[in-house]
Length: 249
Ligand SMILES: NC(=O)c1ccc[n+]([C@@H]2O[C@H](COP(=O)([O-])OP(=O)(O)OC[C@H]3O[C@@H](n4cnc5c(N)ncnc54)[C@H](OP(=O)(O)O)[C@@H]3O)[C@@H](O)[C@H]2O)c1
Image 1 (cartoon, helix red, strand yellow):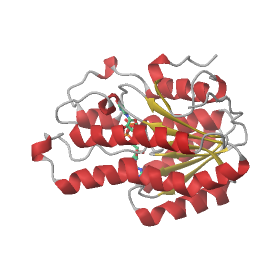
Image 2 (cartoon, helix red, strand yellow):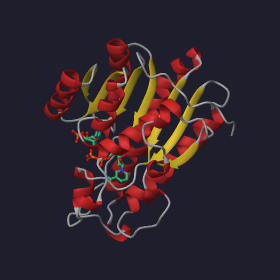
Image 3 (cartoon, rainbow, N blue to C red):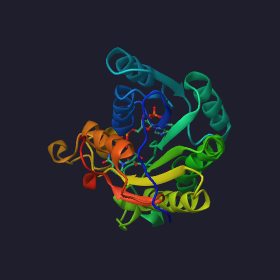
Image 4 (cartoon, rainbow, N blue to C red):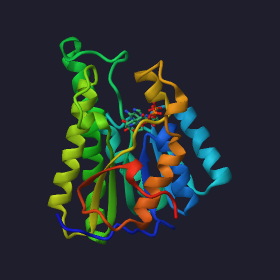
């Protein structure tokens, strides 16, 4: 892996954030728009997505919403085409949308094969398809950053987190292979484990967790966006924990 400068001047750049209607994705959308990016958020449910878009437009900057399912293969080219039509070339792609699969989380012996397939479809195959649709133009322009939002379940074998953990491990490896294959093109990849955050996903997975012990997604988003703008240390294809990143300078 080669070490490349991560620094991206976000101002005016087209950015797609999947899973952008709430939680970390909405916080990333806000943080990117506040720094001048032209943001497209993707989520399935139109009404919370539109509410987030409206809030960002009122206080932070440019945002648009696309109500699509990242696990639906027919949606991928609609997303790529509509995003470019709305904000121009996409220089930043954040694969943040994710499913846990059925909750309460189940042991592998109790996991339906179809549920594992659906989890892999949303968490791995969808991101793969969307990168395929958007990375070609990035290579032609000689620049782009693709962020894969990972989890500690990618590296630790937590009982009951099987299908989700397998999908995040696969996503991390997809990140490494993309980076190896596109080395030298100016398109860079990073996997980021955001750590435990106070979001609906966390509440669905661990309903009795104390929210006071969990990070606020906006703080995690600020670290990630700061990293994308300022951090030169890591090679393309790296996996990093958000907690290890510097907060906004
Ligand atoms: N929260 C944590 O403690 C934690 C820890 C480690 C890693 N992560 C990772 O961080 C990322 C963000 O998680 P979060 O906690 O912010 O989750 P969240 O609050 O549940 O938000 C998930 C977002 O993804 C969207 N989404 C879900 N399935 C989708 C699909 N098939 N197509 C398009 N959009 C979809 C949701 O909107 P719709 O439902 O309307 O589609 C929502 O906007 C995920 O990748 C997660 O695995 C979270």
